[in-house]
Length: 279
Image (cartoon, helix red, strand yellow):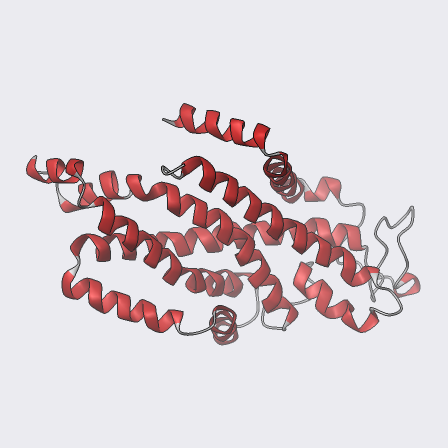
């Protein structure tokens, strides 16, 4: 099964060069995050007010910001924060949301009705406002941002998984497992979850890009990762007052956010084409 999926994914990348490019960008971003100390040319938090707002050059590849800090190094270390927030927040949100959706869809009845009404209440709030509220309550920092984005992603994971569980639980192999005496936990996680894994994986990949964008928005608004931590949204926020004199202070971190979100979205589309049984 895994070999067949990998073969189809390789075929998809050969057929669609944009998907292959997106995969290369994602792998490159992960590599940059892992090897940030070796790739960065300067200390990302070291200020030098004698060299503030310098344009890109040989010593500072992408120039310096309003405090004289090297923008290239800050973007490199910012990739680490974005990957951590995206993966951990989506992973935590998926763990909670998928579990809720699985049991709601499998058992149905009153439990399903109550859970779905709570999910509807969460969905009634705009996602960014809900994340802002949670981050404001928990305070500024990396961990509150991860929790805020994770809670923001729970309702959609629950809805998606519930729909898949409602469909899968009617299939013959689930009835056979139930007739053979398998416990509900085994059926839910061994059969229902595994046969719903494709859509969940695709959505999780798409949501990583949205989570990175949401974390950047929170930092831009001042309720995310606090300065002087090198975070892309915070870099845009601190540099927006200097856009006319030194546009590079917002162009480069903005481009990093744009390429990262775009790459994860394209990669999610490629995974959907491979894992969708209808295709």
